[in-house]
Length: 68
Image (cartoon, rainbow, N blue to C red; front, side, top):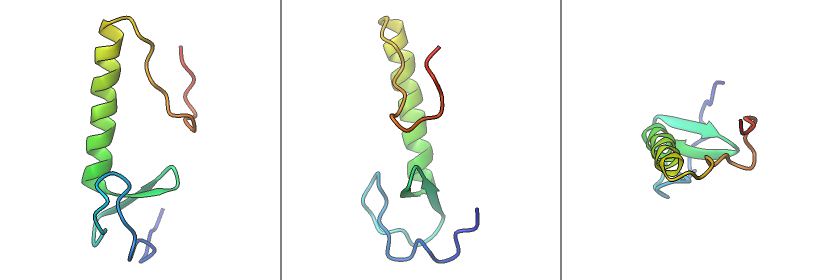
């Protein structure tokens, strides 16, 4: 997807900082690309820890993935 200048004046949904460059748009929210990747890694780690304790993984409400 080409973002053009649509991100100008937007704030990152994770850190709340203004986005000046390297934007990412996912699930109808704007992020710094680094913030989005960090958030995905944090969710993956949380799911791994939850699995060790026998809890099911978390799937976002708007996720297309279905639990196994």
